[in-house]
Image (cartoon, rainbow, N blue to C red; front, side):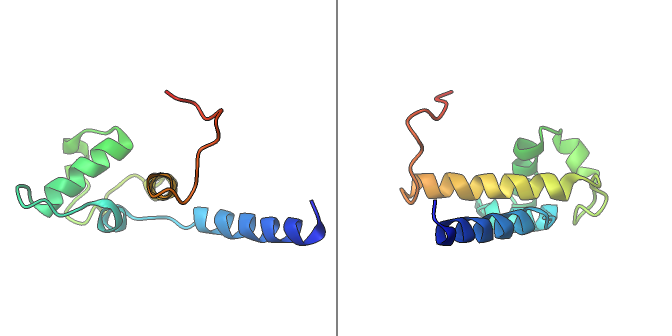
Length: 106
């Protein structure tokens, strides 16, 4: 790998790592990833998305309050990781990146 490629890769890795460290609050995660469902209220859809993302019960998430201010301290860091994974999935779905042949199938 030449110096220019290493430099670009290093810059890219630094940018990703810096972004990875920025917490993402539950309300912001929902704003980014929850589509409005006319058959359900937005809050219910948001809670369902957080249930799927965290593995916690809907009652636990409801107990965090209206704007999720009583959420666990580490949750924004978990949600940032899930946000990055969701972005990666979107890139694969749109064909902007291709999974390698040895990528796990299950």
